[in-house]
Image (cartoon, rainbow, N blue to C red; front, side, top):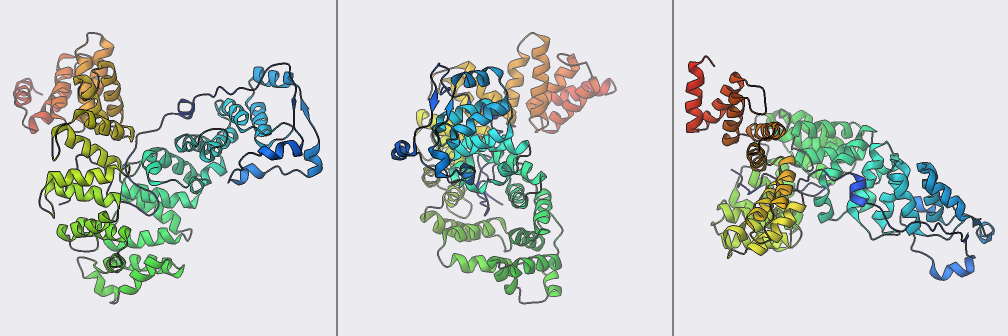
Length: 545
């Protein structure tokens, strides 16, 4: 059985398209970016475009995206001085029309009639984008992505690209690859990236099909769903996307999200191989016996062999992949000892996911001798590379003194960082630390803020905690709120919340009195051994419920 993590995030799975860790929904674009203070001058001065000779000595950095080269002008045109009356800017500023604001941003970005000024361009684009102007939102995404007129900020770039993509902006939907995101940026923005890719997929973007397939397969930015992964891979594969064809072949070969079908597996692997997909070709060629022979095998071992060959070449990513296959029994009989050996080889070469998995194995004693000090060591190595789940687990180590000395300050900083990555359990624990004043100044208001965030992101403990807080208040609205949070936690199997929800329905506090509903929730809690719930079930049974 796969070692249990402190958190239920499948961070050990690293797909070829994107990286790891689930994230909470990003704030709306406006909330992320705010507004800039670099407003155009509204004085009575006139704005002149300097001559080419004057401006050449301080030419601004050029953008790497083609959108900054869409308005080429001849030398004769650029030598012409254009004057813009500030009254024009005043009028644009006052009338608040998004299209006019966008056009002024474009003028400043391209230096068309004014000195090129990315900061002023950014300002005008912000004004238009805040009114949901899709092209302005796209421009803002590009400027934040490339650091034009503002410090480079991937979070804001993704936010604005996503906002434009949701409105059907074709370039925004297709500009994912242009961001060149590193692993940490990907980890921080998975939920936003998922939403972005979903919008692009709705418009028929084939690359988004494969990205969504990977995200569903690995549970990144969305709940893991192999059926959905298969759906998106099929859409991409039907458009002759070789990676999607390879993915489909592997899913059919191993019965992931679909009944195992060797004929389909071979068909899709062959289609990918025909397009030059190296792994598909290697795996297809390694299936040396007939499809009829393969159908009689309970385990398809052949797809594992090419990974073994690649891992033997000391490539950390292939060693990690091979370790996952041994750990999960994918394409090979499960062997946690061999998995640990593969993870060790990859971890020694700095592979963060392998380091994290090795930390988990040392913590649980699966495949290695249980050793919390070694677990903390490997979590530290992965955390130093920005691995969100490793930060959370290491923070727990410092909080409870597992493998390291208790240090609330270090624990808080690690857990806060993990919470910032969107890990609900970390957000809940940060709230507890604020409530108890461990490693940080005591603050009940900040504790509640973090509990609300964790609860909204699905943490059952935080949901129960909020239910308890609201149920202690008197107002009917508070009791209704208590019932809401208890219900969310109860549906996740929290016995105390199930009992509390039963009591609420029995008493009719915050909800309409309903003894049948009360009996239902008491029954759920009783099934988990809650003694008081068992007594309540017996009582209501006598009343016919």
